[in-house]
Amino acid sequence: MEVTSKNFEEKLPKILASIEDAIFVSIDGEFTGLSSKEDAFSALDTPSERFQKARNAGTKFMLIQVKEIDV
Image (cartoon, rainbow, N blue to C red; front, side, top):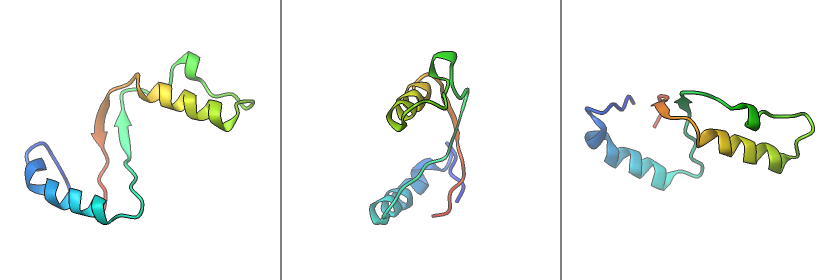
């Protein structure tokens, strides 16, 4: 299903119903960047540190596209 700004309202009920019925939800997005120098991963990072760096990087860039999903 392709969702655009033009058909979003029409598709929203199906999207919400699919989320409600889902066991697991994943969203694949395209951003204007991936990470900054202070958020660069290190082989010595703990899982918690890696998650925090990824989370921080995700707040610094703009979401420009959500990839197509099968619903």
